[in-house]
Image: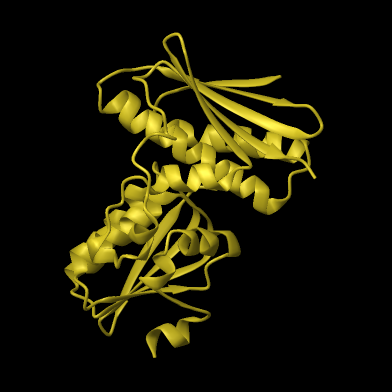
Length: 109
Length: 139
C-alpha cells in the first residue's frame, strides 16, 4: 500500500500520522514531514503508527534524522505500532530510543 | 520458476514487494514469515539500487526468480552492479544496537535485518553478477 504521512501541530506537539508501506522509496515523504514539524520547534513528536503496515530500515534512518534535527530534548513517541513493525524496532534496539505507547492520550499526557 | 525483471530504481521496490508477497502466499508462508522475507529482499534490493547502481553511476536491472520444492521457498536476486557481498560487509556489532539515537551509525542495519530475518541467506558471485539468495523453510 502506498505510504502517507500527515503532520498536525498543536500545543507544541507535532503529531505525524503514518499509513501504508515505508520503504526507501517512500522514506523521503516521512523525512519531509519531520522537516515541517521541526520548523514549529515542537517539544514532542508523536508518530501515529497503527496504520503503518510495513517499515524497512529506511524508516529507522528517518528516526535518527528526526533525533538529530530536533535534538535529544525532544522525545519521539510511537503510538500503537503493528506487531511486525515493532519487531524491527526491537531487533535493532530502536525500542530503547523511542517511547512506544498504546494510545494517543498517553503520548500527549 | 517465476521471474521478475525490474530496473535498478527505488520505484521498483513496490513491484519487488508484490512479487515476493505473491510467491510467499502461493506456498502458504504465514504473515510473519512473509513479512520477514519481504523485508530481507527489500533491504538487499535497496542496497543494490542505492550503492551498486546509483552511487557508482551505473544503470542496470534486478532479476528476481522464485523456486520451491515443497520444503522451502527460495528467491534469488541477480544484478550486474559492482561486487557486493552482504555477509562480509560491515556487520552491525551487538553494542551498536544498544546505542541511543544520537550516537547511531545507521549503515548496516538493513543488511542485519535481511540476513537474520530469513532461514538461510547466501551470496554468490557468478561471472559479472551478484546473486543474493533468500530461503524460507516451509512448515
